[in-house]
Length: 456
Image 1 (cartoon, one colour):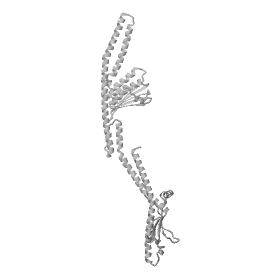
Image 2 (cartoon, one colour; image 1 turned 30 degrees about the vertical axis):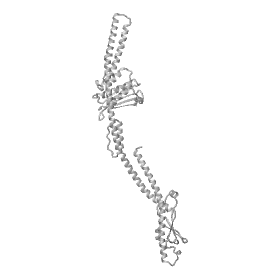
Image 3 (cartoon, one colour; image 1 turned 180 degrees about the horizontal axis):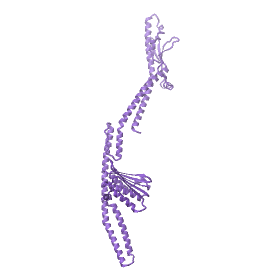
Image 4 (cartoon, helix red, strand yellow; image 1 turned 135 degrees about the vertical axis):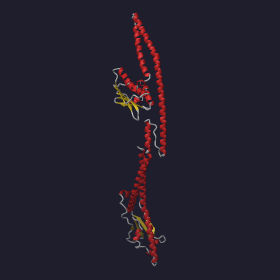
């Protein structure tokens, strides 16, 4: 899962938790606000009745205090205004048939759902009535009892919750949206870092990254740049070392070819001359003692050794591309394999692009790759058809593509992990030239492809 989506999901979870906490708090506060309204209503009505009590006491001093109860004068419109909606107030001791005086509870809000009306009292409890004396100094003046209406309290709480939740939802949506945009904008440079790492994986180590405002991303970008520089230096050093090793190996091959030609070649020529002399002398004497036959067998063995020596010298001496050019040397390579036996598999040569100006290490590497791949396909497989394709890709990425495919079966994974000298050698040559080598399964066989940059 992408990091941006993970952060946004966590942000939404936090917003949802905060929204749930706000809902619980709003429910508790709205439900308990009825208790505060009940207390305030009782206090206001008690103060009003206290003022009425002392007013009656002063105007009607001839009456006893027991007969100064503010009834029925306290049930006025002014007293109703002092009572909060959903609260009922009564005076005690009450007269007969007196009903509580309630605040206006109609139109308080939408009717709450049944589950809300059942859950809230269960968890938050019921409301208690509030008792306030009319006059603390005159206990005979009576008391005011305020009782909240349970249904009105739940309706008020539900209406309050709806109002709070609407605002909270809008704020949560706005916070989630803008925070998500901020997170996406902050993490957008990570794509540049990933792209740079992908280019480094393809061999483009010098990948310039933009300057990041975030200190953490800037540190990562700096580390990626340093890593790319070190990888490029290590790759260049390895390629230079490999090229030097290949040059030393080629020098040794040429020196060995000279030694074989000078020593073995001359000795084999001398043996052949001695054998011919013995055969000629034996024939002149006319003796049939088997000496001539032995001399002919020595001559045949010497010819065979000399042919093998010539083949070895062809492999050890300078490769053909240095003498004939890449195109002519590839044609000569394919023709030499075709001419060895009529039972050899069919070899198709496909040359594309201009190969005339390709020389030096690139031509030598391409020839060695083609030579080794053809040798492996012919000697180690049961191929009936082999395709050798050499293509020059012109343009910005001027490179040479060598591809050898056969239908002789074979396990691509096993071959790619092989530590044989031939495959190891072409890997070293291709790496030294700055190219790449891949071994993949093909149609009923294997496909070996090498890319050699010509600008290297």
